[in-house]
Length: 99
Image (tube, rainbow, N blue to C red; front, side):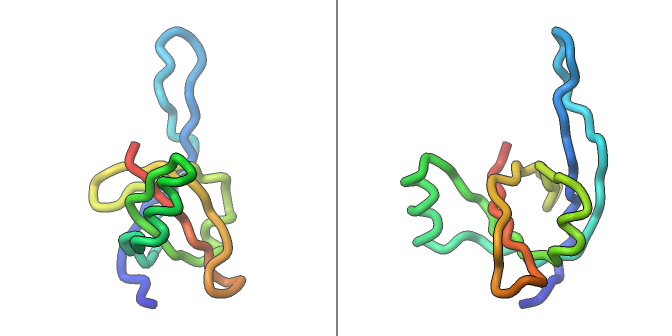
């Protein structure tokens, strides 16, 4: 697996009040492998009422430095739907959806 893409991880929170703007509390750019989801994963996510645009693999040590909930790839922002185990303990697998 080649980690040949730059992904910016962000921890975004909603500000208080009637305006409710989103505030980026922390941000970090890391190397990652960004892949489209397989057909099986796409259908499993749809069955759980979720949508997956990309599957992102990165080093667990870089991802677990903060509680990231958004990522930016290719100039677009994506929600981090889930983050879980990858092929071994050194990597994390992130399911990202637009929004």
